Length: 311
Image (cartoon, rainbow, N blue to C red; front, side, top):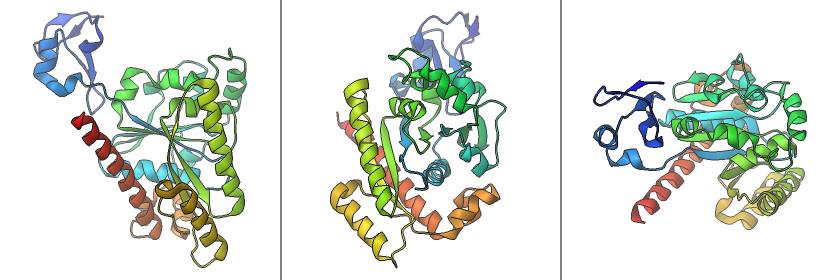
């Protein structure tokens, strides 16, 4: 199909990868030649960039995975980053928390091969969502019927489309509390993982299970997912157990144990109001604690940029 060059208005048929770019507003830009691309985008137009991909996962339920996913996505968006949040849990709690339900969901991306752009739901400035529904249970069955070598890579193949990868700064994947093919797909797509951990004994067991899963991913699927951080949630300093769990996490994970998210009723109220914690109670402990984690994520991005520049 013929396009117009955004620089010189020359009509042409795109043939090469460099002739397409996606702007910060997710508009497609077409260039008839390398000089035209350079004239509009400069040297930065030739850098290979894509979204930072983060899975939020713990095999145990009730650890604050969805609260963490929504809060981090909303906080990053408020900091000016373009964020896509993908819900891989059939319960659909991301959409319920934000008061949105797309006409199409992750099921349609995986099973019916819909383009992610046609499924994405804008929910806030800089903040888009791909919702889930009970149809994902059928997607799990569909995945199980695929060839062994591809069944764990379907999500990566669908979301790694160049326009999607370059349209966002961050893609967060909210995972369900189980070890299933959908979570394997999430980990095959992600570069790094954050593990929310409720401050109790059973959640510690969940962390060990996730770490075992990461080792198996690397061994059998040849894909390494970096542990970015373990995030203590529902922390109540008044209880001895919570303090002991936090101390155990800090001793074992060192700098990868993130500052704890304190128990806060406002965090529990926000989904019922269909709001993020920053909209519902911006001055609460919950908002303060999650913004601290958001800034930690951004500081890691800045360190990586400095490392790349030095190289």
